[in-house]
Image (tube, rainbow, N blue to C red; front, side):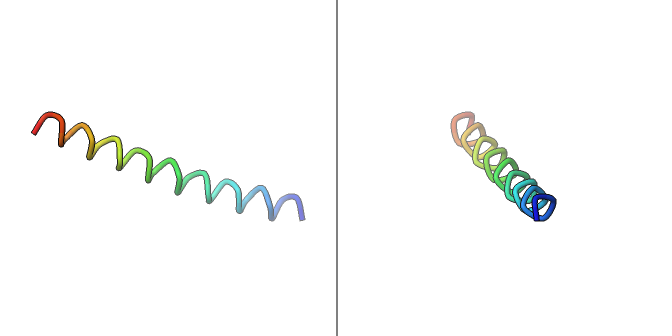
Length: 33
């Protein structure tokens, strides 16, 4: 159960990080553009 929860949490964190990086990249592009 704990392993299942941690794997789900890791998947959610990786998605969250990718979304945050994409938003940061868009902010940089909009500020420079």
